[in-house]
Image 1 (tube, rainbow, N blue to C red):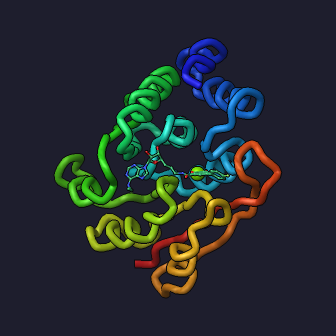
Image 2: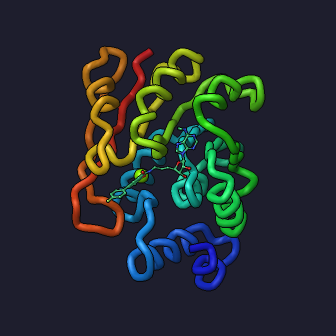
Length: 206
Ligand SMILES: CCNc1ncnc2c1ncn2[C@@H]1O[C@H](/C=C/CNC(=O)c2cc(-c3ccc(F)cc3)cc(O)c2O)[C@@H](O)[C@H]1O
Ligand SMILES: [Mg+2]
């Protein structure tokens, strides 16, 4: 994937990096990026929120990191968390190739350990936007951790990938039944396939 970006994308042009990855994953080797269909929903929710502090759980190769960072207003920041050093190394190169390294802080380590340290280490008061795309059975735990650490504020938008496939049943149940969230499902399809998948947008009500 990294080679495909370096070969086919234009340095400093995030859209060309996104297109190169999508082309590679459609034609050469499938990969678990949020992809272009769900990516358009991510783009529209992000543009609507226009966050000054955004968090991504599960960088993987940095595809959604680039999608998010390219739409951030000047001075806004994205913190992305990845615990696999090999994926983090690839993501750093893809983010840099897109020219977005100044907007993105990639933190290596498990989200469970890092979330409680984000305030002291990065001066984050709270997040306006959180993209969840890491292990599906950790969405709920980490959402509760973000609540407990006071990193969510009234109006914070959580956007969760894969709520249908592979699925995040306990997370969905929580955000859809909790009085502290206003939740909505965006139907789409699993990246680079015709299978159904979707994103769940949940607004924290405080
Ligand atoms: C331990 C929890 N904390 C974590 N802290 C930091 N990074 C974490 C964490 N978990 C996982 N990660 C990282 O996030 C990424 C994991 C993503 C998991 N995603 C999926 O399993 C996934 C899987 C599919 C999928 C769908 C259909 C299939 F047939 C096969 C796969 C589609 C997707 O869009 C997916 O996001 C990796 O880079 C991993 O190293
Ligand atoms: Mg995903």
